[in-house]
Length: 109
Image 1 (cartoon, one colour):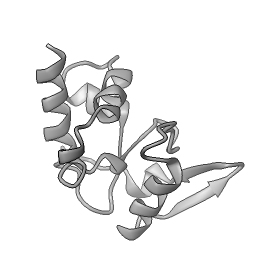
Image 2 (cartoon, one colour):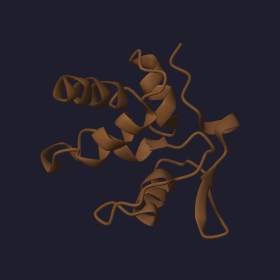
Image 3 (cartoon, rainbow, N blue to C red):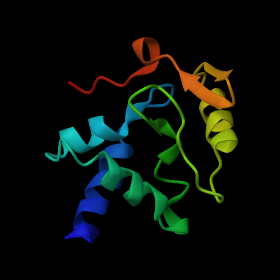
């Protein structure tokens, strides 16, 4: 089950356009698992290396508009830099990176 769910996560994340972000919970809700934000995070955490270039994992942030990754392979700083390259305004606040969801949240519907 997890494998097919992870593939659905990757497919949906690929639809997030450049310059926009989505939240873990938003992705989970669209996939029919409204309480599955952590599962979305886990799916992105174990994203196969061969898919790092095709799945824009960096466009997914937490519901507070904060980059919340603790992964050593894909740091919060790296995620912030990737978002900045896509013209997403990222602000450093008290050691964390924030994005204004009112401006940059993806609205697929």
